[in-house]
Image (cartoon, rainbow, N blue to C red; front, side, top):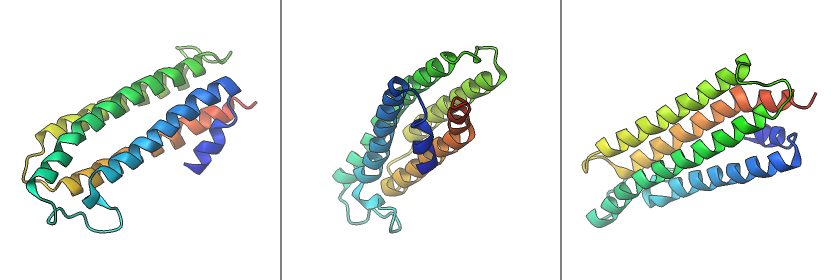
Length: 160
């Protein structure tokens, strides 16, 4: 994320504020997701043996709302990002890079929907801590890969 955080500073001040605010929300979301299930600490093997049934059920019940929230946040962020891209003089909806970037956004939204669907298929025999850890890792990796593949190169191209 360090490279990406440096790259977004190259945006115009107004665009920077929008994107920075959304990135802070993404970061907070990932921290909250990781910390919701106390047993999902990334420093140890996730294990809910010490939790009672009520606590495990509570952890399982929160996950769908987290995934719906991140889907809404991502949709708004991608819309803002595409508006910023289209505000550049050389970028149009027919511009190949813009189309590829938009397609990547659509693919992320599809993956978020698939994660949400998977969340609803998780049954009570699954370990909530492991589920949280896996979803946290998948989301972190997915957004990091997108930043490096699409966002950073676009932002760098606007500096010229």
